[in-house]
Image (cartoon, rainbow, N blue to C red; front, side):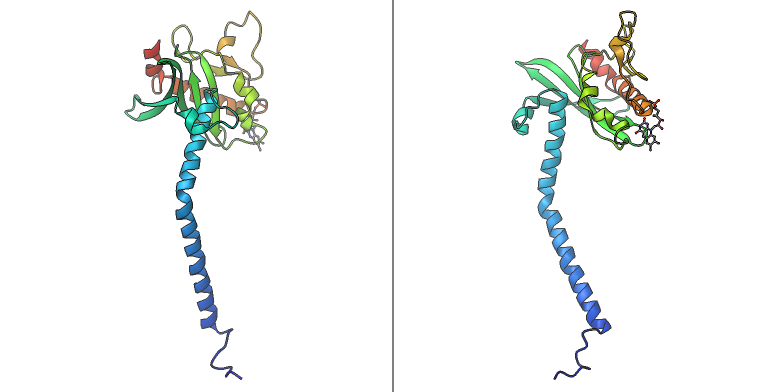
Length: 221
Ligand SMILES: Cc1cc2nc3c(=O)[nH]c(=O)nc-3n(C[C@H](O)[C@H](O)[C@H](O)COP(=O)(O)O)c2cc1C
């Protein structure tokens, strides 16, 4: 029989040794997994970003090879009024510009909303919009993600005749009537989420304005 005094498995030192040993093994396993998975995570993040850009450009095909499809998109840097540079994306066909995809972001009700806006080569007509990151409430503000609402943007004009940012998410429904000459700038509101809609109006107007991509879009006209 082993001497109980020489080996007490419930002793403080044994408990500490087991706890520290287990912690070390687990931390090595977690750290190794993080290192091994990092390149895969970065690749997935990049693919997700590319997929969103393809979606806003209307170029994503179900089951399509994202890398191959994205090869038709060209990145370009634009210097903003504050000196920062922003990456935009151009889709060309046979050397001819088809659309410009601009990153947009700004505050909603609860969160910073991030997305992309696609503009036709006239620098004025919307080709698509897509928010891919936000913390707005499910069922309320998160309607900005819904395809039906995004489709309402297609064909709308960003600027009025004076070249001022005019696009607007209205409260309620756009008056679909010949008397409403502003309908070309208006998008139906998000029911129960007027504040998120106001945030979208504000951030889009900022990014197409003089502090954002306004001067760049102007140069296309
Ligand atoms: C829990 C909770 C979450 C809400 N989330 C949002 C939201 O994500 N976006 C939003 O605009 N309004 C949200 N609201 C509602 C706003 O407080 C506000 O009532 C609403 O924007 C007004 O829009 P309406 O005029 O279309 O009703 C939320 C309200 C509550 C109580």
